[in-house]
Structure formats: C-alpha cells, structure tokens
Length: 380
Image 1 (cartoon, rainbow, N blue to C red):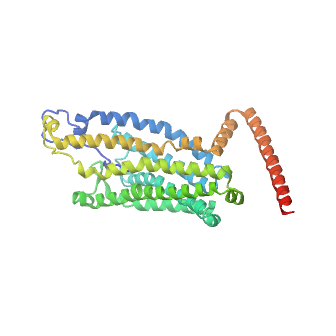
Image 2: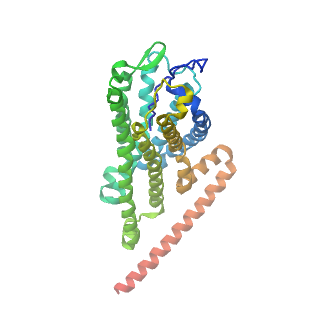
Image 3: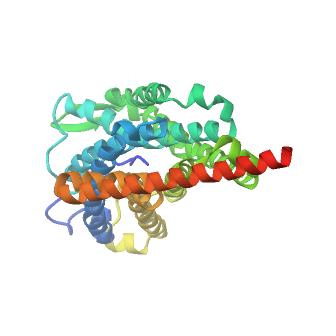
C-alpha cells in the first residue's frame, strides 16, 4: 500500500520550548518516538530477507524448463519485488535517515512514477496468474489458448504498462523547487478533494482493494473446482492432472492468499484515515498530551504503521512460500546450489533422479498393462 507521506520532511527546530506550532513529523517524533524506532528496526529486516530471496527466486523461475506460463508470472513477480525493494530502500534512506537522494531536478519527478508503479505491479501480477490458474482449472478446454508462455509474456508486459500508466501523472504532481521535492500547489489545492488526493484514493482502492477481492473470489472458485476434480476418479485419469499441476496450484493459491491477507488490512486502515484526524498544530506538547483528538490519532497511527510494516512482508517472503509448497522449485534450487558449490553432489543427485524416474516409469507401465489386461478380460 502506498504511503501518503510526501517525499520530504520538515526541518526540526533546535528549541522545542519556544515553539507555538509544530510540523506533523516533529509531533510524532516527540510523542511517539517508538514509531521511528519501529521503522528503523523492522524495515531493514525486509531488505535483508527480500534482496537475496527475490534474487534466488528469479534465478530459479527464469530457467527455460521452469517457464511455462505460471513460471513467467512468478519470475516477473520476483523481479518486480526486487525493484520495489531497491526503490523503497532509497525512499527509506531519504525519509528516515534524511539522506539527500531524491531532492534533485528530474529525479524528483521520475522517482515517484517508478516507485509507485513498482509497488502496484505486485498485486497486478498476482491477479494475472490467479486469472490464468482459474482458466486452467475451471475452463480446461481454454487452457491451451490462454495459458501459454507467449500469452503470459504479453500479459506481463501489459500489466507493467498499466502500472506505469496509472502513475505517469505523479510526474506532474511532484515538482523540484526550493531545493526540495514538493507537490505542485495546483495538485494539492482543495485538501481532501484535491486532484492529488482523489487520484491517490482511486488508484489505491482499485489496486489494493478491488484487485485482492477479485483474487479472493477467483481463488475460491479454483478451490471448489479442484475439490470436484479430486472427487472424480474418471476426471483424474482422463486429464492426468498429476502432482505437478496440483503443486503448482497450491503454490499459486498460497502466494495469492498471502497477498490478500497482507494488503486488505492495510487498505482498511488507509480508508479510516479521515476518521482519526490530526489535532490542532498550535498546541504545546503538554496540551497535546491532554488532547483527545491527538491521542486517538496517535493510537490509529501506531496500529496503521504496524499493519503496514507487516504488510510489506509480501514483497520479501514469497521465496519461502515457493520452498514450502513447490517440490519442483526445491529441486531446481538444490540443483543450482550443487552446480555452484558442489559438482560431485550434482552428479550423485542426477543419478538418483534418473533411477527414480525410470522406476516410476516402469511401475506406471506395469500398472497400465495390468489395467489393460483386466479391461480385456472384462470385455471378453
């Protein structure tokens, strides 16, 4: 979920006691210092986890035999999350540690476009492979037409274009002036009804509200149909769904559901923003402590930040879902590790896989012969 925090912060005065009016960041820092501490502690955890895990996931899913259509979406998701975390790191260093990284001409206008587009791309890609899995399971006769690798690449490119198109206007909203990256005056005129606020609300609720709900509905339909297929012995034999397809469905459903449970709560807290407004800014710190409006806002802000930090996890932890639910993914990850660090184990592993596959083929052939003989006797 995108933050409504601007790409700049106010300067902190040297003497608190003489203040008659404070900036929002100054008030939060004084009355809820734990929020800043939380940001400095939790956010780096997702970077430490996300950068190597997304790199590994992309390296596995990009391999040729791992790139049927679903693999293309998961490779794009890993790469998109990696790009987002890199841009988020820049934003975090700018906002939390006050490094001057964004406050430059051109970069001020371009960075919000890329940052927001990368953030929105993840839910859109999950919707893409959720729709594909729905078609594959619930409309199997359309699978060859709509679930090909070529079609997946086209859809992924289209989703990237949509995400960039939704945020190209950010280049107009932000402007470099007074040696800072600030919103244009015309964009924020009207407060809660301003062009910037309305556009942000519409796009946020669309991508982080409607898209996860659509994923939820499609997932439920897939689960219902999958159970129906599993109950039909004849369907299993005819379609030969097999363990690979089932495992792929479990992996994709898990990724999709995890996105839902990490984005919908953030969306909900975001929609409650205007129910817990800030109090007056011209109060002393002692008066703010006794002000009910400010205290309610602080409680809301604390809950919102905790949910947002937990919600950010879906950009960093999909790798672990792949490892837990994907047998094929684990195998490819192990092969990659052996190729890089242990050639002798790679040879032994391939030998064992060869023996295992031949044993399975022999057993399958024997079963088919037995079933065929039984059918012949029945017909006789």
